[in-house]
Amino acid sequence: MEDYPAEARRFWGSPNDPFSNPIGSTFVQGLEGILEGLRQGAEISRLAALLDPIIHVRAIQDLSPSEALAFVLDLKGIIREEWKREKKGEAIGEELWQMECQIDRLSLLAFDQYVRCRRKVHEIELRELRGRIFGPRENRRP
Image (tube, rainbow, N blue to C red; front, side, top):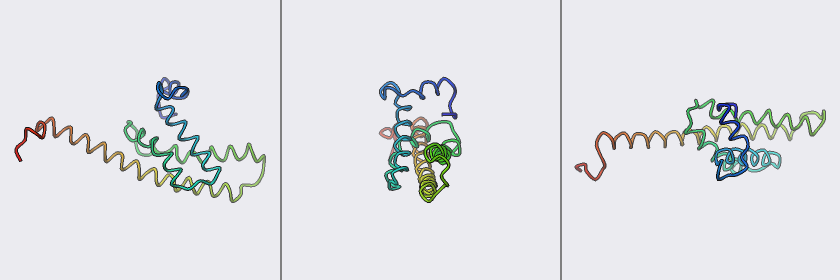
């Protein structure tokens, strides 16, 4: 949420109603699902499916790729903080290492999805530009 202006953070930070705040709701539901999935050792495909709607939103916003996707790697810090709080001094073990490896794989999948979304946005923009320059397809000669 730090990528957004303060007004947007206040609005998106309290997603009580998915109809009045679909973006905030998408982010919260996706991130909560991902964190829970990481704890449960979910398959990467399930985690990627939860991430997909968030990436779609981030890909159309005015953010650099690194800004749009940094939150995926930030999950490592969240997981470590929860680990410290829940495990109270226990050594970092195999379980945490596995979660961090999943986050690394998830970040690569997020990048792939982001690129696909950006490509689609550019295709739409190009189609609209062509339509403005050349007119609708039905008015063009074959």
